[in-house]
Image (cartoon, rainbow, N blue to C red; front, side, top):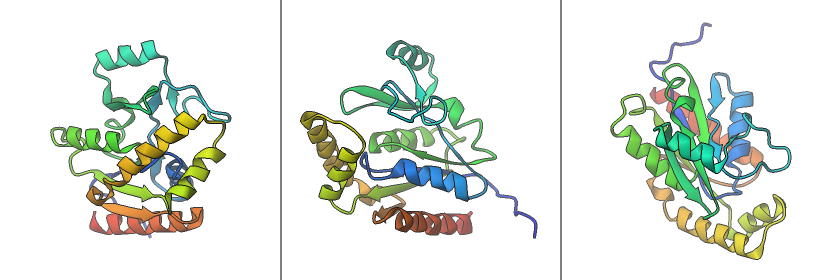
Amino acid sequence: MGAAVRPSAVLLILAGPAGVGKSTLSDRLVAEVSGFERVITATTRSPRPNEIAGRDYHFLSEEEFDLRLAGGEFLEWAWVHRNYRYGTLKSAVLARLPHTNLVMNIDVQGVRNIRAAAATDPGLRGHLVAVFVAPDSLDVLRQRLLSRGPMTEDELARRMESAVREMREHDGYDYVIHSGTKDQDFRALIEIWQQVRART
């Protein structure tokens, strides 16, 4: 049976608190579902162990970030945890979206900014599907954050405060995944994708 031609590709956005498993879901979706590619976002923070530039993030210096920002190259950007900036380059999305399903993971600020951009950009309008990944509990989220590597008490407290704020916004999303195991979360994401595909 031949593959059906999609009338339009989808930008599937996964949002939620840091440590909830958005990157794992994105990577697995790309690996196991044909036709998906991951949007590589940019950041001014340093790579974590095992992270590779161009695969996990575009790691930019503060100066590089400023130059690209001044040149209007970002679709959205924000300060995260007061320490560094994250952003989505227009080139990473708009040139690929007409013909390729894209998945990306960003924080709730980024979702708000991309939705605002979509209101005026026909290249984005009608393509967005926003999924909020909610942690099973704040205690579980705390343990996940601590398992990612060394972190000061102040940084952990900031991330937990951010998580509480972000979780207040989940009602405004197209879909919500209530996080369990990695396999349960992925099954929930696949069910969402099947619903989206049926609509399009």
